[in-house]
Length: 317
Image (tube, rainbow, N blue to C red; front, side):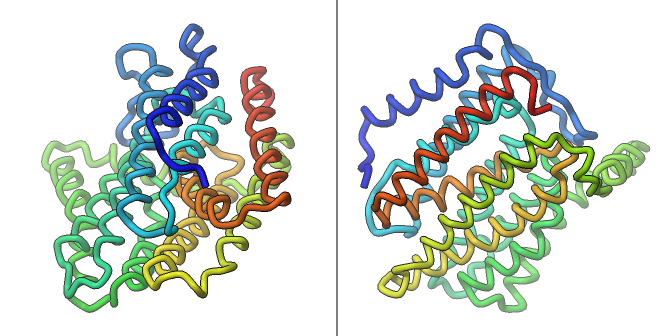
């Protein structure tokens, strides 16, 4: 168990700074994909802003794990894992919409976790839908998470008709405001183009960089092994831990499907995917210590280092 303290947090930030070092001096370029809100032209060095936002999300993950029960021990592993996962992906070093999307997804899950053992938490259900809906305008693929977010609320708190309607109104509110304002301003075509440009899927894996497919497959296998390990020894866990783990696995499954469906396209879903993976890896490596787990952790670390080097060399597209 790696207990949190100020020295470990500082070490993690310094380690992340090493992963971002080249970008601080020679910033890379980001690519938009018909984004509704485009943050790629944010003033200043996008790599510095991207690093600071990554650290902020890592701390949000740590606080999420501290506030709601995922494991019985305190650990700063979610903080470390997220920095390692984002740091090992060269294309995610800059400020991107995906990082903001990850924040809104985590805030949505935060609200869902807060509904446990509460009678008709209308406000929390509304906020969960609201945050996910706002995130949609940064990450289009959040649209496909809507059914799963209802499932997650059902797992944590029985999905009564009032909670269903509260979350539905939360999901619709930003869309009604933005689309209504656009219609009033005569710019509705912008929103329609945003939807049309992103709803299409390209499943032509043959045209995808083979290295991307290989590393994505390896990372998927590691993630599935971690999830399998999380399921073990859960019978002695509290009801809260089991429910929260089920929520993470449902969201992970949805994000994994999107990742593979979008593997040949640019997508902003990866920061959100890595955020959930960071929580699952933390549960797995915190509750099960063995030589096999140590080997798995080393493989994961080596994989991230290799993908970072190949990303710097432009071999991952």
